[in-house]
Length: 444
Image (cartoon, rainbow, N blue to C red; front, side, top):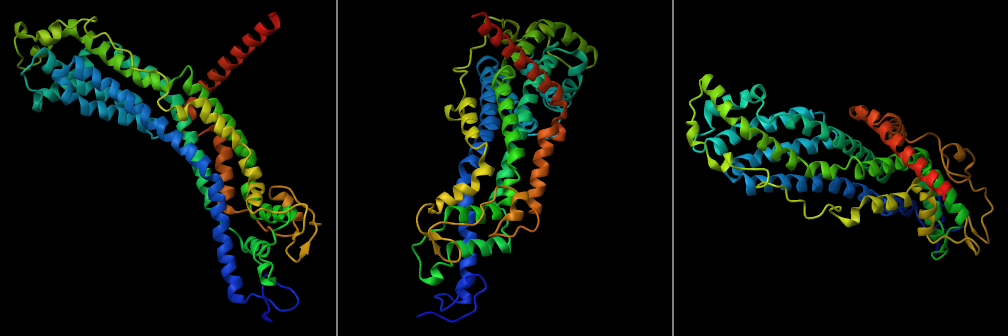
């Protein structure tokens, strides 16, 4: 038995199975269900990006830090316990730099070597002479003047600047992608959209037609109207994926971030070895400056007789990527599948609703053999002709996301502008390689 009530959305002649209160509850339900469906389709892409960022930023750092720590523990054990906090501080700074923080690589490396110098001097050269108090501070303050490590700190800074610059650009790109996906998941649905969704999914219930499914064209109009501002992200997102591909290839190739972080071990070892022959002169200079030091004849053989052969660097167990599931090629393969994500999202949502195209279906007003309305395209401009959902203005939050993504595609994050010469260099190298490959093919 139906009700003779005037409904706001599910209007039709005759009695209805619905009340105003039921209609309101349908709108609440359809909003929840639609956003849940959007999240379910964006879930893999969102966590693909965030998961790759986590592995890219954290795991490579952990491996590089562990590689240097093992050198100190195995070869320079007298100083390792006190040096490990400084190793951790160095790699923490490198990790923050990769994630886009505004800090100086040179300053981080300088601090590390300033803190390492007193430990090298008093634990390896003069064991038993405490490094605490004024003596340690004085040694730390004189490191840059006496330059015991030679050119190795500067060489390390230059190598890391190149490799970490590429890694920083990729990290910022991944962070930008995660922001876009978060905004998509929390998109606000307008009143007109909720009315259209309710009419499509629940108004048939008010007629007692609980098994009928929406027509495909009808569903596309409703979803494209609701997601018009989301579809505006399509163009910027395609360009973003292309940039992400280029950065990922660069970081995995000639500017390998993982190899650079693993290489810190070799630079630190060379720096300590460089300091060995200069320690006698250094001890004299420090004694002239007033530091009470252990006699030279008591210098520890642990350090004096260390040779290049005794500390030959063991190669890392494996240089293949840490997580095969996040191998750059596989990561890019997955991302490429989502290159058209914002353009095809309405279709995916409609297919998830099990719409019907060739048989009797729900048109929003009645059961029909086929939907006869005009099916509009994607984007805000196309919605002017949408017969099902009125789109009055862009979604302000998504308009801001689109603008930010376009700006990122053009110039990158402000803190990564220094990478533009490097990116140009990478493009030139890529073009030269392609040219050589084409010439070889023609010669064949």
